[in-house]
Image (cartoon, rainbow, N blue to C red; front, side):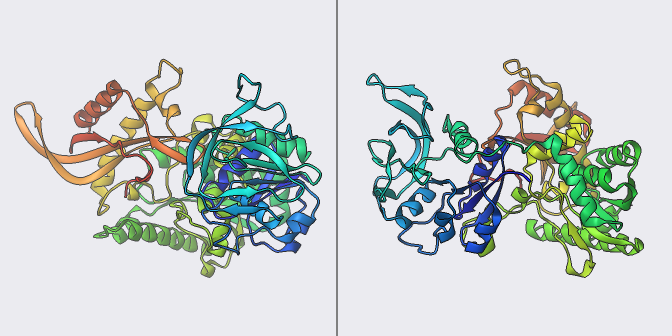
Length: 527
């Protein structure tokens, strides 16, 4: 049994970052909404609890409080941002509104030499005070310490930027240690979960395989499992893991909707049927999908159609497998929902764009989600440990609807064919172009890259003739903090080469643009 940290989510978009940092310290953790029951907290078996941030104010939303069991359990508690404020209010301190909000870089003086911050600093002042370079994001402030607490950190504009009651092992910081902008953030969280909570640091993907295999075998027994193989990283790793556990009890259904990347279908079949010797049913459903997408231009409508048709194909294939009792999915929790608070509808959340299908009640199958508790980089570590090729496991994520959300407006087979080829050229050149500063390819330096089909035409000159053909846009993004993305500053020489190749090699495309829209407000996807 792994040592565990419980993260109570108060509705922040960045709660996932806290969990990710804890996992980086090789400590298992789970995110749950703040209003779980006292019984749940007592039964969870946490060696420590972290209270997350929130969009709310402690004096406006009196429902956003930590359950009483948090304070009765006798385990260390760390409050972050709103977590600090609710800790203060619940334990007898004061939080007040401030007209001086703080969003961005700050330098915090560490005080009191607490166990949490002892020896952790970025620089020291001429007076010998240890200083931390941190990221702030708050409006309200703690203005009076609760009884038993002492000052742990401060800034000129936020006199109580951290507080601690070491007798009870309660700690709280107003800044955000989970973001990479807080230079020592990982060290602070590591100190809390490993040092103060005493977690063993035994959450390691290589050894996780044996646990997962045993759990799958126990769940499934002798029953058969059907898995929807999309060709993406998550479903591929799920397939490899389940196959390791139960072998021929698993049947993979690979649905080719005609909206995959170039040669993706062939590569998937070669990998799973050829190398892993898994049972794979290859369903060419492109005509079915394209037929239903005809004349549909609304992006959400397209998503729903693609998700619905996946379910239809699964139902048809599942009926052929008389002994199939389980539907396996490569779902990972961070892709489905960014905040545990969404379960109670109290969180301000951006709905994920990944989950297009879901589990239909009419399917009559039990749900198997062996990767649910993992993050994307953990899934990749697991894939490599399972023996999947590095290039397959570390390739960019590709959404379930595939090219369907990268063809603006109506999805047509001829548009998909043009886009596949343009997209392949872009990916090919990103892999081939090495950045001299890092020594890495531009494919490795970006987290997502793809071409987008624009339903407009532009005049081009080819030799002595003029043509009137389509336009594609290139999109490449880089991520930080596991969630925040911005457009990648690709070298002009690379963009020039890609555009020249696309225009010369893909008959039907006359112009290539590059998307420099930042996220936010733009999404990673084009829709």
